[in-house]
Amino acid sequence: MTPITPYHYLVLSAALFAIGLVGVMVRRNIIIILMSIELMLNAVNINLAAFSYQWHNAAGQVFAIFIVAVAAAEAAVGLGIILAFFRNKETVNIDDMNILKF
Amino acid sequence: MLESIVFYTLAAFIIGFGVLVVTTKNPVHCVLFLVANFLCVAMIYVLLAAEFLAIIQILVYAGGIVVLYLFVVMLVNLRRPLDAQIDARRQTRLGFVLAALLLAEISAIVMYSAMHPSTAVPFAPQGASGGNTETVGMLLYTDYLIPFEVASMLLLVAMVGAIVLARREA
Image 1 (cartoon, each protein chain N blue to C red):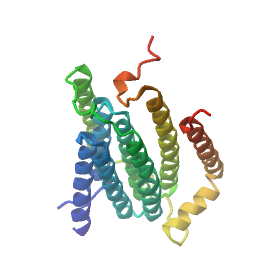
Image 2 (image 1 turned 90 degrees about the vertical axis):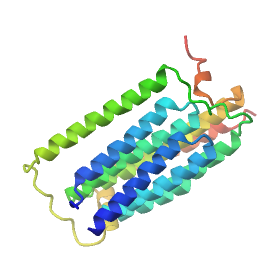
Image 3 (image 1 turned 30 degrees about the horizontal axis):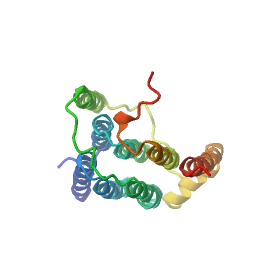
């Protein structure tokens, strides 16, 4: 069995990112779309941690912590928007969210 | 050898739980699979000697964000599972094509760089003695102090914004 190199982590992260992309494109429930975005952010974090490990430089982990902070902010605001929208239109289907469409 | 076994097991779990998050019909089950996925990613961080990041991952993601999602899923409890049908329209196919293209592109780049390993970049010197948490803390409070403060402002603004958005108009 070959030793685990950073490329293994990169491939894992690419696969996770692709899964998240499929979720964003295919699912119609906006809550699940937000969850897929969290999957994609996690894939990016795996990349940062892998490079940080390869170069023995902790800056990658610092950036990953910033990404976690931004993800928390995004989840809070996004879910607030979903709640406000659900109160008005009684739906979480993204196909019905077209009132801004010209 | 042990590292390989652990890595491949964790990778299988991460991919499996990710697929389940995307394909499960019930949003509550989706959230639970998301927790499992985050915990496996945290173990990957431990494997990469980023213990502090792993703790942050468990505390913030599995502890905070997922509870938020669970609350919203419960609040937005739908009588009819309108999302259940995966529509057979153009966008589904487009999604799979886009994801396949992206995966092919990233794999090509990774393959290319695996064939041509770069030796130009020297290894950075190992940080001062002390654990991973100490190293990350030193970086956060010296080199990245201003981004750190900006992140705290961002979290404050997001908190106020979420409260204003979710509040009922009085």
